[in-house]
Image (cartoon, rainbow, N blue to C red; front, side):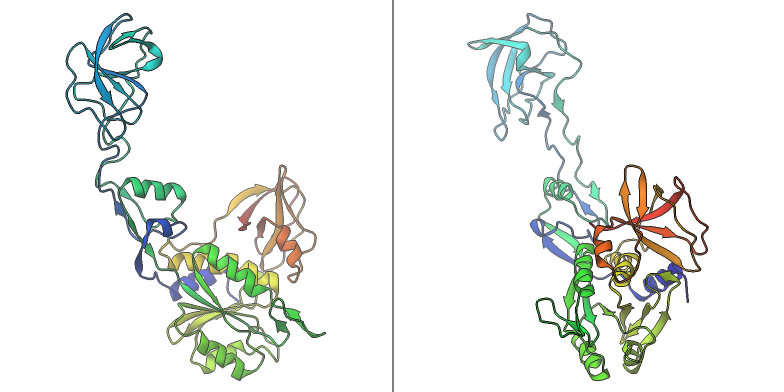
Length: 392
């Protein structure tokens, strides 16, 4: 068996970033920016008023000062002529300030009578003018890689970028295996169960930025598995679920070997998730996940999501961890790194009492995984532990 970190390193060696494609700005949410994008203009492109009021040519007018209103500047309809001494321009928020403007006096500090406006208040140091380019300048860049959030789309739009270069989504072929499995909605026989792992992993992969393809369930015979592998043609990554252990019906490893798989590793010193397999088949990376539902999902968080991020061009690295305090004690750990389903609360994190790798109901209630190192001693309340947050 190898460690989790060693397994991740070998997985990262199997994959590389994919190509870049351009998508419309409205289709870029959640995609990974593939390369830096430069602004095509300054923002704002002109000095603009930050308030409704009057643009005046005086630096520091005293209360009682008066100006003759000589025009108006509104958003989209500026007043291009320079301000003459003794004149003011009625101006609105976001409108270009006329040449020669020293400050914008807010309308609450003025009184207007026909075409004459009088300063009635005491002015602050704020001149209420947004300088041209105060937000960004032409040529300033939004750096990559980054997962594009709504605020990034607003920024790109302001930069006058209509099409966005994003990393191509990795196509992931998901192959669930086992005679005991039926598709959700079907009627299982007395000795069958409903396939669940593939649907949880499908959601996990989609949320991570991949394009998962759910293939038909492969049965526990070599011919069915070979057919499933053939249906995965064109995928950037093949993920099998189940059949990677040592039982008489665990055929994934032998069939993959018959198809020419170059094995990178098999078995990881972790729980749940020990029977993890990885390699390449005809140059395509393959990851064989364990069949127990929680084992598969935990391995998805620990291995699949970081691999997908690497394929999208992010720096390879393990799933982010944070430090939390225990709100309940932890028992001593064995020789494998343990990922315990847990729940966060105001007093810290608590591991669920039941940690059996078949219990999806417990995983559904969990919002994090406590990472307990190999051979860890018992931990008391208040002890600090590392935690991986789950996608909830």
